[in-house]
Image (cartoon, rainbow, N blue to C red; front, side, top):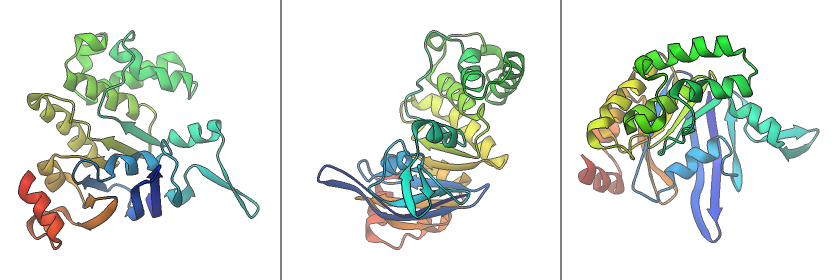
Length: 250
């Protein structure tokens, strides 16, 4: 489903990612963990070309992300081409980024109507089903200011799912939440994993990574230090840097 080959990214003289190689199969859940500043969020943003890699490549279902071959020459996609490709990758950020002047239902139907040109009645029916899926059927007509942080994040997940993506990217989706609200968002993500959604999750929630992920990646200083099955990495880390990190967070 997703393949990353020798991906590198710098901001000025600071190299954030160094020759990253990754692969995730359809239906798998990959969790990426590591200290702040290790490059996790930048990697996630490079996957859907919110950040332009300096070198390397990302492939979604075999198709290069953000670039196109024309004959023997490689070109960056136009804005419109990239927008179409991004429809296949939903992304949920740390902050909820909901439209404050629109209800939960209106937030969810906006992209299907505007981008996919769905009929409003069809979009509403699908949005209502998604809000029920994330446990917010009774909050469809509430505005973001009337919702808790956890509820807003669940609306954000429903909004991404409304575009029917092949892959979901989560950038520390619980980091902005009060501790008592974290569980309700993780429960929705667990349900998505059980339904077979392919997911890449940057997270500090080690219990979620242990119980839900098929593959765990530990990053530090822009490189992948260690990766493997979560239970193997968490119980028997091989690298001293991984051991030191886990000793602080578990």
